[in-house]
Image 1 (cartoon, rainbow, N blue to C red):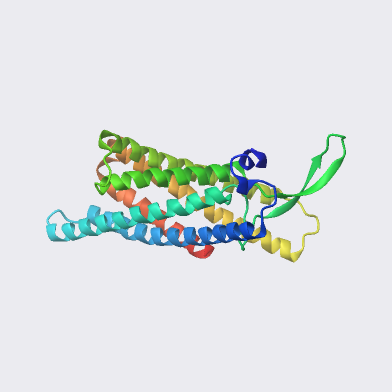
Image 2 (image 1 turned 45 degrees about the vertical axis):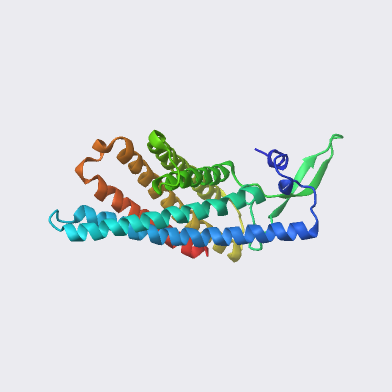
Length: 277
């Protein structure tokens, strides 16, 4: 996977210099999209905590308390609608990252592409050092693209639940595809975290500065926590797939098990998204 693959698809991703006005506009869009994406994720995590807590409460409730069960069901339905709307909005933010290149290239705190020196070999055999954008790892790109696809298909399923679209017999299948893509995204994210952790630990610097040591520790903390979040998300999504297509595997306490993992996932992601703001 190279930069030229993306440059041919979108002029914004080309190495050809753009006008200063267009460059500033794209940088601002990337910056706002990243900030908006993080804020929407944080709000979605809050809805996730409420919804998963409601699922656990319903699963633990005594069968005779019908009034409480009705109120909890209403709350769960409201949280589900809020989460669905939140995912649709997040899909728009992710799509803006896709078209502006932030999904493929590293971006700094100002929304500009990160630039690094790269050596290229000329036809005459000589080597030239040129400035090039920093391409994300294939695993990171795969994680982001599949997350976007998951939220986009999930938005279609959400419209079907609101009776704004009719999927008919395809609703269950599309719901499974949504969860499967989300699981693939989490798996790719976890694999990318492992690669980053290993490369950071293997990095050898015989005389590291204090600043480099602090940076390495911060990177390791961030990647280990991200790995934990991705692994919990992956297990949760696999359990949701079992509940959708093979509920007998989880037994009579399926709702309680899934609710517990959903709650754990929402809390971990809430902490991660809060620290990224």
